[in-house]
Structure formats: C-alpha cells, structure tokens
Length: 302
Length: 335
Image (cartoon, rainbow over all chains, first blue to last red; front, side, top):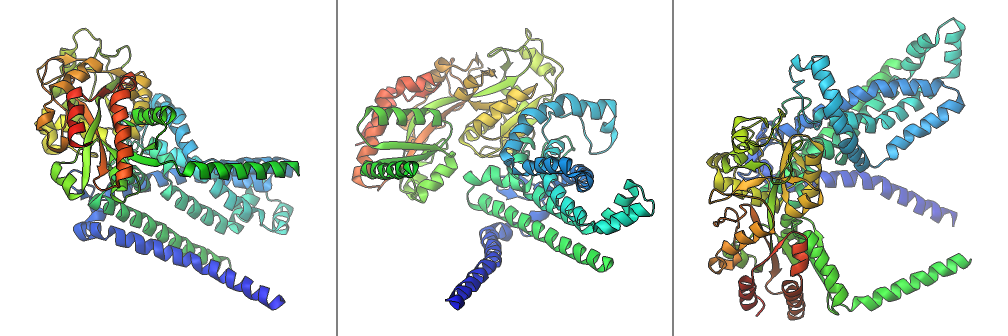
C-alpha cells in the first residue's frame, strides 16, 4: 500500500512538473505557426517597421515595442525607489507597524487590473491633464527637453507608466522585503555594535546582503509591467502612430493585441500573433538576463 | 445540516429546471455592437411575449460575429459591414438589412450645446486628418460666426478596436475628402492620422466626456445616453442637418434599395435636402442551409421584429427599414 501511494505521488508530481515546459513550448509553437503568414510577408521588417495600416494590410511592430519599453521604463523608475524604501522600512519596523503595512501592500497586488484601468481613466487622467502636465511643462519647463513633449490630454505613456508603477509596486516590494528580512540579525547587531547608524547599517549590511532581492524584484516588476494589458489599454490612448512625446498617446504590444484581436482576420490576425510571439520572446529574454545576473551576484557574494 | 439539505434541494430543482428548458429551441446570434441595444431589447420582449424560440444576442463586434458564424458556433450574425452578393454566395450566407442608424460627431467644447456646432465636409475631414488643430481655427470660426470658440487644442477620439461604426464613418470621410481616401481609406479599423482610441462606443463617449476640446464619432443612441453635444453636418446637397430621427429617415428613404444586389448598401452621403449624411445599415447574416426548423423559427422572429419591434427601435434612436424594403426582404429571403 505504502509503495503504491508513493509511486502514484511521484508520477503525479512528475506529470505536473513536465506539464509546464510542455505548455511553454506549445505556446511558442502555436504562436509561431499562427504568425508564420506575417513573417513570410514582412520578414524581419516586421520588427523595425512602424507602419500599422489595416486598410493597406501593412503591419510593423516597432511602435508597439517602443511603447511597451517606454511604459515599462517609466513604471520601473517610479516604483523601484518607492518599493525599495518601503521594503527597507518594513524589514526594520516593529511588528505592530510592519504587519499592517505589509498586508496593505499585498492588497495592492490583489486589485484586478481592470480596476486600475478605471481608476486611471476616471481619476488619474483628469489630474494629469489639469494639474501634472501643466505643472511639468509650464512651471518646470520640462517641455524644452526633447521627447518630453507638450501639453496633452491626460492620456499617454506617462499616465500609463505611473499606473503600472502602482501595479508592480507590491510585487517588487514583496520580494525585496522577504530578502531584507533574511539578513542575519547577528550581522545587523554587529553593525550597530561597532557604532553604525541605522542608515549605514541599511546601506552597508542589509542592501549588500539583499542584492539578490533587489535584482529579483526588478525582474519580477519588469515581467509584470511588460505584459500588463487592461490597465494600460484604458489610459495609453491607443494611437498606433510613432510615439511623439512622453505625454502623447501611443500603444503597447499587449494593448494592441487586446484592441484588435476580436475582429482581426487573415494577415491582420497573423500580425497580432507575431506581436504575441515578440512579447513572449521579450519575456524570455528578461528571464534569461535575470538568471544570468542572479548567478553573477551569487558568484560575487561567495 | 439543514443548510446542506436546502442546498441539495436547490441543486436538484435547478437541474430539473434546466432539463425542462432544454427542449425549447435556442437561437444564438452575435455580432455588431451598433444595433445591440435594440437587439437585446427585442430578444427580451420576444421571449417574454411569444411562446417561441429563445433568442440570445451578444454584442461582440461585426467581424467577430462573422467569424463565429463561419465557424458555426452561432445561428445568425449581426454586421454593419455589408457583404457583396458574390461574397455571400461564396460563403453560402444570406444577408438582409434589419435597422439603420446614424453615426454622429460628438464634441466636448465648453458652452457649446448639441446641434450648435456646424462642420462642413472639408472641415470635418481636416479635423480628423489632424490638419485643423485648434478650436479657434479660422475655418471653424467662419462656419460658426455666432459661437465663441475657445483657444483649445482639438483632441480627436476614435475607436481603438475595429468596428462597423468606424467603417461607416471612414467610408463617409473617403467619399467627401480625396485626401482622406488617398492617405487613410475606409475600413473597420484604419491607420488614424491623429488622436486617441477608446474601446467600443461607450469608450469613445467616455473619452470625449473626459477631455475638454475633444471630438469623436459614435452611434446616435450612445451619444444620447451620454448626453453629449452632437455637431450639425453638411450633407450632399450642401445643407447643414442636425442628427435626429427625421433627418435619419430622410436619408434612408432616398436610397434606392431595389437596385442593391444582395441588399448591399452603404447609406453614407445620400442625396436629399434633409438627409443626414452619415448613416449606417446593420445587417443580419445567416447560413443558407441551417435546417428547416431553425430557419422557420428565425424567420418568425425576424418577422416579429419588422412588425412589432419598430416603436422600440425608434425609442432607442434607430430608424426601421422602410416598408417597401421589408416587403422586398419578405419576398426574397423569407419565402
């Protein structure tokens, strides 16, 4: 009896484990097959062309790729410092404060993305149009910096990036917090013992020790921000042309697919599958880079 | 324990109910979102008042509806993008018009009420081409000497998903502007020269409502519902007309349906002094060989729509197909 449950358990676990790589490769194959028509027609031009014209059936992914990178970059640069500070604070704060704070941040992660989208559309867009953009352009004269752009209507890369920042914050923060918490108390106490201030302890001990956490957090945030669809769809403006400025509207890979998929046909649909393949390849690349970086920090700390 | 018993009882009765309902015929339709408010109201009223098949209509978009019909997951499709007679034959589908409706230009300019803003053909095309960028532009001022138009950038709002409404609107722009025809063209999604996209009709309305200085296009009902200001447009005879049921009907009646092969008809830019220029026809498509029983149930429903559904359609801002065309449909399709 004992042997048979063991046997079944082992087989079941193995099946589940192998299902994942099978799914992933099936995804790749499916996307590759469905997008083959687009690759045949456009070749690698598909990646470097910014033309997206359903009427003349000319498709290129460049604007969507750039849009995805811009929003992701804004999201990360806004959320990283915040997540970092939060994680440091929570790791060091007394239990009574740290617990509710940690729960509140985790709660951020459980809000569905469509709610973030609605919030962005109804609350953030008007604020961006009426307060933030005039302040950046007229008061701080940011408009003179190239690509920063002129007064927009509240929709666009900046708004989408900031909403993404709030969305990825809990993921980055959770990873960092867990790693910072794992700093051996002995090390920290020793640091305090030789007269380090709290800041010096955080800077030299906790952060050094938690390098992996910081990197891991960055990559988790990256992966999440790249593929986010619904929230971005609401506020990015869905304009397929080349991005003109940070405050102008544009599109991302995921939102382009979501917008067009239901009605697309033939080459148009194939082009959307090709976009999907590019997104998957980008995620894979990030995974690979993150693995490489993590291994490297590992080697260093040893 | 009691709760568990109750739960089991509910479960059993639910299953029994489901079984009892199963022998009623279900007719599933899906497609265009343009007429969806009417179709949904009709199927509700029909199921309530008639002891007949249950009708179900899902608004998923014209193209998606056609795709579903091709893969035989639904019984009929709604579409705003008419198929030519050859295409109908190729796919063995039949097509007939069900309703017509207006696509209106909505604008959000402070202190400008519905119907007050006048746009001629050139100006309309140039705004959507991104050539006219500000509401204080001389061309707009010339058309609207009585309005005080602010110094406010124009934000164009269009559909981000592909849609029959976009087909109707871009078809009209292609007819009135050579520039538009050559550089953008017509289709259910196009390469917009400027502006931001909203999802479906409500998304466009929402964005127009949110952005001061915006202009967009949507189906009439949605504009009414969102209480947005519509623009008066110049029609083919050079007259400015406000969008309402009267100008819509004028356009529908001026069309020559008898000549339309396979009921292929695009109702934009119709002649007639009172005709509203951007009208769309929405069609029903069904497979030619879908089983006699199902066919007769479907025809029964569509006949009911033509007879009893009219007032409800008008209440929602759509114009029913003229009696003469209904007769044509009965002779050619429902025979």
